[in-house]
Length: 339
Image (cartoon, rainbow, N blue to C red; front, side, top):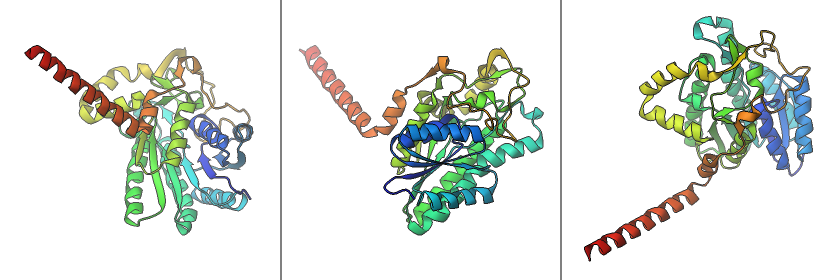
């Protein structure tokens, strides 16, 4: 049983944002329960969490199985202690035009990428509610607001998570609960998913540039877990730009994405027909893919927007000071011109 450590659960913890977040929590000294399916990925992630200074517990689980997720939460409580933070990250997807997706594939994506969040939240609340404390972080995407072509199943799931989380937040506020839930909307991230999701595209799938490294996303997750009072965080300038543009001119964005969205999500490299597929079985059962995808050369490891989103007071004060300086300078110029 862990003592004095924050107890954190991360689903989808074997790659990308989930793994980077688990390592970041480990760096803070947390006890981190890693929930995912692939044994090799789980073992690799556990080694990195412990090397960072944390304590790791691996739990092999399919988040689309509600009973299994509840059993995983029970094990975490028994072996590590009371869950302080639950982070929902796990997802799967299909890169394909909608007309080429089979009903069972669309259902599977929805069960993992949406209902997996629901089941994880249910399991967390089962233990958090009697204690009236805890934080649930839903890892979202700019695609929770803005759908793009070739990702209908994924976009549908992210939109669903957004609505679910807002409704849950209202209920917690109504109950004056000590439990917080917040959502972190992500940009395009260099994760292994682009080498292992089911794809029917002619070329290798890629995130829509600009691309961020998973560690940038992880900073947003860890910060949100410690500051869950805000309902939502945006990571990356592209996320902010996309959401603002969608709020102002969604129809124009429809046409822009119809023109650019197919090409921007594919590299010039032909897709390997034998690449692994994690829709039904874990791609990292025998091979650990690590945290990053194959786009390191195209990815950035920093985001000034992320810092600004976490320091609204400083940014606001700087903006006010700038406006005051501009007003003073303007007044001085007007007086000088009047002489």
